[in-house]
Amino acid sequence: MDNKEFKYDDYVDSLHLTGRICLSIALVMLIAAPFVVARLTGASIDWQGFWPALVKVLIVYIPSCVVEFLIYVPLLGAGACYLAFITGNITNLKLPCAFNSREMAGAKVGSAESEIISTLSVAVSSLVTMLVIFLGVLLLIPLTPVLENPVVKPAFDNVLPALFGALGMQYFSKSLKLSVFPLFLMSLLCVFVPSLINQTSTMLIVIGGLSIGLSYLMFRKGWLK
Image (tube, rainbow, N blue to C red; front, top):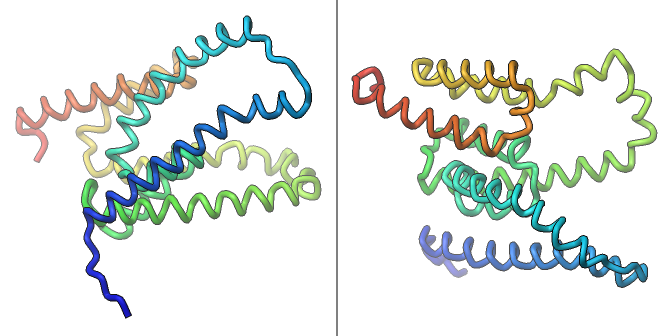
């Protein structure tokens, strides 16, 4: 039996190799999909309208992609990010799952243990998500009366806020001095400027920079230990 010693550096290298290959394949498939469909259906592509529409989409999504990369990679690690960027649902599924798993294991952010735990948790989350979607498609028609029931519907509408409220409280409570002001400010802005709710990536930059600056100032003043 081959008992090769586990080397973390080799593990990370294999993650990057596999992740880059899979991301490249996924990217090619996403770009090729509309052209393949057009070819199969015999539809023509209006190139004069295609390029202006593409530019408008890229203006919005390129900054968002850069911001999400800078935010998620330090939080999740390389392996988990490769999986999450392919399967999606990062904010509402993958991130809470990884955070909870890391919290339960007591792994420190940025450590080898955190990297491995985050990768496993995101992988399991992806598999469970696909299973739930599969079952949801099969049971959509039978469950429609239940899901649209006026008594039950408010519960489904508030699943995401309840999830992030519970998850966020775990981290806010670790440093109330640091979290109170950013949380209060963002809540105030979202109440008086509701359109900011749809500008998540932009607001993450703003509140992230504010939180870093505030934590540095409080540390220098001796208010944080």
